[in-house]
Length: 502
Ligand code: GUN
Ligand code: FE
Image 1 (cartoon, rainbow, N blue to C red):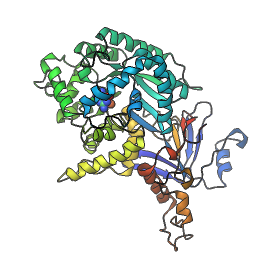
Image 2 (image 1 turned 45 degrees about the vertical axis):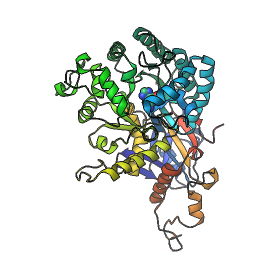
Image 3 (image 1 turned 180 degrees about the vertical axis):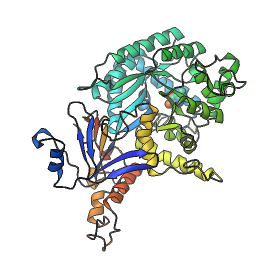
């Protein structure tokens, strides 16, 4: 059984698929949608395979294959803090809880031990790709990249750029020092060898100005130059997360202080640094930091002009609902952003978010959309998503293909399609995996809930088709699943984690 997203409103549920992965490249060669038991050999023969040349992996009742989760926003060094300091809002939480923990990663041996445990966890929760923030330290973040590379996870890794408004014990001494360390990190990450059988690196560098508040104009300007010189270099930062943060950002960057954006926007006078008023997005745009491979975390309180800029630049939004609830930041209007054509993926935002699992983000994304829908007095009638609750196909999309779009990797990852990398999960909702929150598919069978054809149709069976059965399994996994249900985790065809991995 296989599920894979197709669009924001549709996914494919194939109860009897056969999917071929190349051992050499780790890419998906082909997918046959419906192969009845007993016809596997015929189908293989039709594709020119002799059965000795292939390893056939069969799934059991209650197991299915799906694309790996994409966590578009996570702070690796904050995992030791999850569940601590839950009383704070953003700016106090940073100074009271977050910066003290991140500063410990100055010690390379601590960084090595901590990151080795941390990355194992994100993999086992089913994240096959993560956009990681490290700390401000070069050496510690080099270690983070090495650890990820050794495990075989796909990732973007950045060191935080932060040269002001941070405590004395955790701040970079100058824009020059920050840029030099950033260049060194990029060089280090690009020197890591690609995955076996491919020419494509699994770990990539990403520019990481922490947020506008923590960067001087000089630093943002230099980062903009680095970005301009290398369009392939991804960028990540925070935007419009918390009211106090937005007020402070606007004070720090009055419109008069901002350069004109390197690439003017249509209608620019209203929306960039030459405007009378600054917007948060306008600050990043002024320095050339918004483009198709920019990941913007949170986007909770965006103004109309900012939605326009983000859309025009084709930048992506990382929706981090667990964190947005936990730090009382607010409920992002994700449906509205989707209707406006903004790319959206999900982020755990550990440790603003208290769970490293994208499943938790899926559950909270659903809740967030329901809060938005409850607050809305009259949902606009002619839109798909605005102020409505997000349905299962949309939640699946955000957790996978939407995330791939946000990191500009949609041609390689995010769905199970020929030519893409085999970045996938084997999920089980069988009772024997020990997650009692999920009603096991094997229990369905036992109690006759499953009603294929006439077999169980009369006694308690609801006459569900195999496709409906699989759709039900996916929904139960998304809302009640956890890492116990993530049995095997593959990246680029290689088994790297999950509960069955030793
Ligand atoms: N803004 C700046 N730094 C951070 C961080 O570490 N987490 C969150 N949630 N927001 C931030
Ligand atoms: Fe964050």
